[in-house]
Image (cartoon, rainbow, N blue to C red; front, top):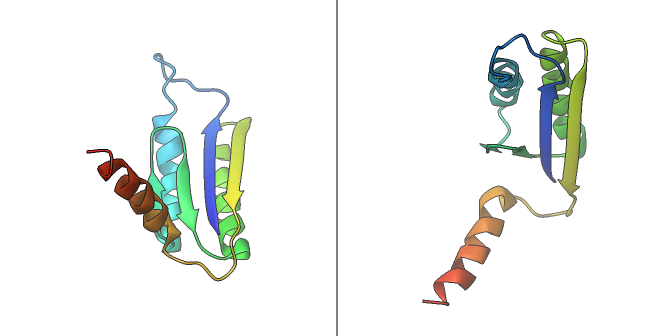
Amino acid sequence: MLLAFSVAPATTDDPDGSVSEAVAEAIRVVRASGLPYRLESMFTTIEGEWAECFEVVRQATEAVQARSPRVSLVIKADIREGHTGMLTTKVERVERHLADDG
């Protein structure tokens, strides 16, 4: 499964509105999980089995919740039995099609 999620506090004390410190706490959880992941500006995508992915999301959400009483969580999953390495393979396939445009 590929699971993309975005977790952030709904409130922040940062004068410019940044939530990066709380998001960094969530990413520490992702890194500690050992699952393959990709951090991007709006979502973090992890790859693994159903239970382990949702456990990481739960722990990451709790890490953000420790900094804010209100948390926003968005999840999108691609569930495809028997496929691994899709975190990079899916992107590589698209890039090959784009290279054909040259």
